[in-house]
Image 1 (cartoon, one colour):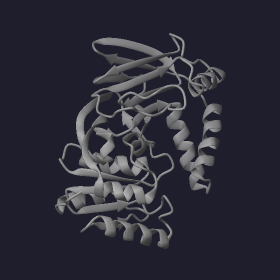
Image 2 (cartoon, rainbow, N blue to C red; image 1 turned 90 degrees about the vertical axis):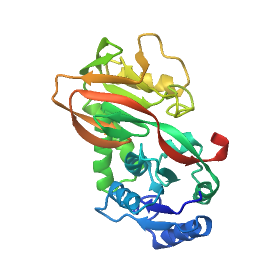
Image 3 (cartoon, rainbow, N blue to C red; image 1 turned 90 degrees about the horizontal axis):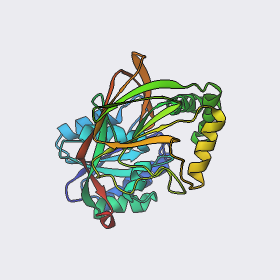
Image 4 (cartoon, rainbow, N blue to C red; image 1 turned 180 degrees about the vertical axis):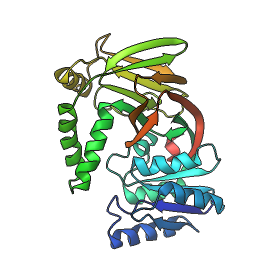
Length: 299
């Protein structure tokens, strides 16, 4: 990384609410990235707004420190701008960083900012909102909503996620979607619709990961499970690495498609953050729209 960077860190994640951790990260960045500035978000501040301000100030490299929500928020500002995104994975899951091969160790991640190479990856969009990992409708959106409430009550993210899963399954219901893709209609009654930025592995220990982020398509996954037991069985099959039977789910790779529903608005997720959007939902891929620093071995 040759140009000075604006580093924007979520001050409430990855231990960054600890002044000593903030000092350590600041020191690591100053030692490895000449001319970098470091800003920690405080309650009420928006990482996207800080990224816009940094870009307007002339920074061409902007680093997102946090989980997938923080990274996705800043990436939405930089996609298509020509500016470069750096990633410090400080969240619980760090899916985007892991799929890029960025180490989750703090020192190693900072070193990647200094020694990595710029690569171009795709981003997805729905109704002009950007996502770097995935978007979903139905059951998962309910899980995220319940998880955020439990975290607000003081539970850890992992425990909140488990509680939210149980609660969401209690409230479980099917909904009907009409997907229009390549001139054809697909009508399904389903508990969840999953849209990935590129193709996600659906089975085995690598389930939920992507081998590449620049194939130029979205993956649309619609399971056909009809009840709570069916949905648990569906998840278990994926975890054990077994193939789903034909008819268990639709997996469609496409550059764009439209989702229609009888509802005027739907609750969806974007990179793990809950949003409400007007229907229809127009999804499309933006090929190689985001420039990001990744380990040299990724290229």
